Each structure stands twice: as structure tokens, then as C-alpha cells.
Length: 228
Image (cartoon, rainbow, N blue to C red; front, top):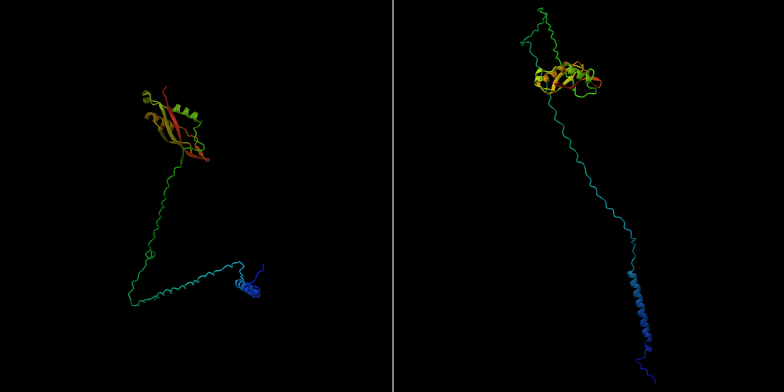
């Protein structure tokens, strides 16, 4: 079967025309592409390093105010000394000083005795406890013998059956003498009186010593009254 071609359907005659149109379109596309890339291309010189920004601090300039000097104080007016000269005609009273030599009178010189104030003797301190306490000659055993030998039992106390222990306190001086006996615990007025009498008649004691020096010391002795 023979294929019949229509002259309208024949494309061979338009082949060269479409080829030229294709070349033109391709060139146009290439040109547009070149123009587009050149416009979008940007060159940046940013290296990513940020330079520090220094802010200059403005320091205000202060000027010290000039101190005004105070004006000097005004000078005090000078006072001129006025010397008055008395006239020779003025009446001036004359005073005469009489001497004892003129009338030959003797000058008496009296001696005044100086007044000497007597200082009151200062009592030395009385100790209660010292390094070396006072001691009766021979010790406590001899003291008990002395008391038992010299005590005279009051007759009234014996008749009334009164007995007991009287506590007497006294001071041993630096020389060992006994002074200021006092009853610290009483039993009976008659027994107290006898205890004070016996204590006052004791011989001198060996004085108390403090730092190698004799001192006054208070001492207490019990005096016992017992009926047989």
C-alpha cells in the first residue's frame, strides 16, 4: 500500500528554519546565564575577625578654685605715751623713812620655836596565819601544865557545879609578850574572868615569823574548867 505524503505535513522544508531558531534560543539562554552569574557574584573581604572598639573615656578637667587670701588685719593704732612733767612750783609732799640708827633704838629679834607635829605610831598588821606560828616555851605540853597549875577554880562556880571550856584569843607581839586577851566563847562570868587572868600571866612566847621577820600574830587557846 503506497503512503501518500501531504505537502503540508512535509517538515523537511522547515528543518533548517527550526534549527536556526533552536541555535538562537540556546545562545540567548547562554547569554542570559552568563549575565545572571556575573551580577550575583559578590566579593567579600570579611575575615571573620571583629576588631575591638575602644571607647575613649572623657575625663572631666577640674580646676581648683583659687583661694582668696584674707586681707591682713588692720594695724592697731599706736598709742603715744604722754609724759607729764611736773612744774617746779608744784607742792610735793616729802616722806621720810626713819631708821632705828637715828634714835639709837635696838632691834629685837625673837626666836620662834618650830612646831613639830608628832606622828601617831602606825600599828603593825596583825596576822592570823604566818610561816612560823608563835609557840609557848616548851611547846603545847608545857602550856597545858602551866594552865592547870595556875588556874584557881572560882568558889561560886564550884558550889554551883559550873564547868566547861572557855575559848580565849590574844595577840603575841614581836617580842613574845601577850596582849589584848578576849573571850571568844563564854561559859560563866567567873570562869571567863579567871581564864583571862591566867592568860595574862603567861610568860613571853616565841614570836611568829613571816619572811624571816617577827610579826604580831593572833592566837587562840582553850582554857578548860573541870570539877573532880
